[in-house]
Image 1 (cartoon, protein in one colour):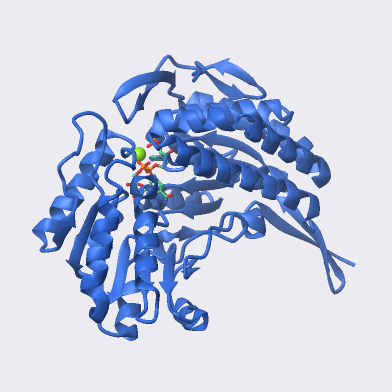
Image 2 (cartoon, helix red, strand yellow; image 1 turned 180 degrees about the vertical axis):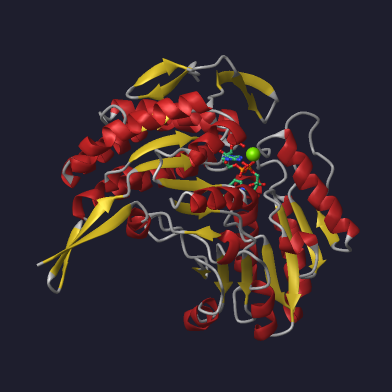
Length: 462
Ligand code: NAP
Ligand code: MG
């Protein structure tokens, strides 16, 4: 793992304006594994100017040529797959096999999808006596979290570049090495100088400066609802486009006709994967009262098996936060069936895979995003009750429905207030729109809908 001591701006690694640095810590053993510069408003300004200067050239580059650069970027990510996985494992702590398959694998698929979309998308359409041109929005300020460090970056940068936008990225302070590796990959792929720029730094300093910068036309943010609300207000004040991917508290609804054992096993795996640090995780499992006790037993034994197979959470603060939610669950009367607030190891930011039974909708653990390996089992009386519980949070990012009959599951899914639903364990689709209803966000990422976020229309009448 090599840490750069500069910022990637205008096609080169340049020294930061100030001397502050961020220590990168491995959450498995709490050792410092690198240092990166903590960027200032001055660095952000330099990067935004570079992105503005590069905008006319990149916007005028034919889509097929932009597609070729994205295809090259995908190929570099493929060639450096092992290095990506090792870097994510070092700074996020996820098991290497998961880093290979998901943290490296998914961004490769997404970069590939945008190489193809850039080449095939209709950037011009005819409506009656008008020709409508789909033009790039301009300079994008991208602010990303640490939970899927490379995926969150690629899900913004790839569609932005496909659209003809230029980008300044401020990645999460906990996972900057993956972001530096991505900048190297962009450079190797032959993307012109200034089209993509990286400023590492702290959220309230570099992130804030980027969101506020007059030279930024669109702010695309993924992270907490609290910061998202603040960024949305800043962007609104400046009449800037904004895209927000925020938290979730998704429901996994198991209807009585479903294969219960399968639904519970997949549901537990979904929550424990990435140590529960997935905004779309199905953290509430809804089970009919007649099957409830059986589901609790199945979930408890499935979760216990994850004991030594999941990684830590990202940092000491998140560990303390997750453990305090577990304590709150106990205090509010939920029944702990496996796991608990004690840390399973002396070193590292680990949290035990935890399952709560007898959770009711009014409890904090049923309402707030925990972002750790914690599952809540909620009992429902009938389908209307299940629907009320499932829709009874401020969030609406994802969900799952299980039923013996696909049509029954679909009918229920259509009544959920949420942006995506997996039917009987449907697989993740990197081209399907991803984003939230309600307070889970504004806008969509991935596929053609994600590309649309970075385009604006110009109508010419004849
Ligand atoms: P966060 O604070 O919202 O961070 C997301 C990004 O925003 C990071 O790059 C962060 O920088 C930056 N940021 C922070 N304050 C900012 C500000 N005032 N202006 C501009 N940018 C700012 O989220 P977090 O600390 O990583 O995690 C906290 C909680 O967010 C989690 O427990 C979870 O509930 C939620 N979360 C959701 C998602 C999701 O995909 N929906 C992902 C991660 C986290 P720093 O890295 O320097 O803080
Ligand atoms: Mg933060």
